[in-house]
Length: 229
Image: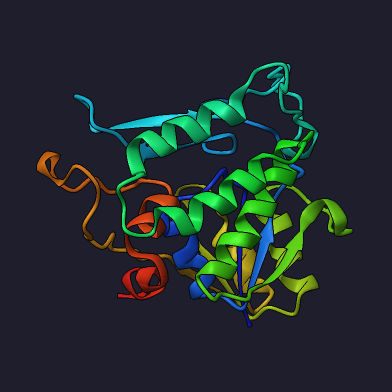
């Protein structure tokens, strides 16, 4: 059984879903410290400007470094939902599959969300469904798994009966691989080659690393095959 572990992200990039494709179970690591300027509350979309892209960011309350991800609250005094929908519509309304997925976003962002992690996980499950992915999903805040750093990753894998852990490429810099080896758990690192596909504003060239909605708006049901290939 292959397990991958990842912090929740707001409408993640393609590489996030590549890890889901290559795993039997996805564990959402939501009870570790929140880091600002990451992708937990923001992501990139294509835009017709000099840079070629922009962030859409969900405002959050009190960015304390001592808060866990699942404790971070959305600042709903800001009209961020309307802002995100307006920016997305401005930049993607001419995309081939805009109507199909924009309706979902209107409904999803139209709900009242308090916790950032709840919104992230809801969107993640929904997008996985659009891609016809049905991963087993576990959330660490609901799991009784102890330990810190690599020890905790190992214990999560053990609790799920995993024999293989799929790590992100950055894991090579901080994981203690001996701890996995002692427990008989194989570690493999993600090797994701970002596919090129037709986007909006192609006169600016192809831009990798955009939110998954960039791919969905442009390629709809074919999106999963583009990620796989």
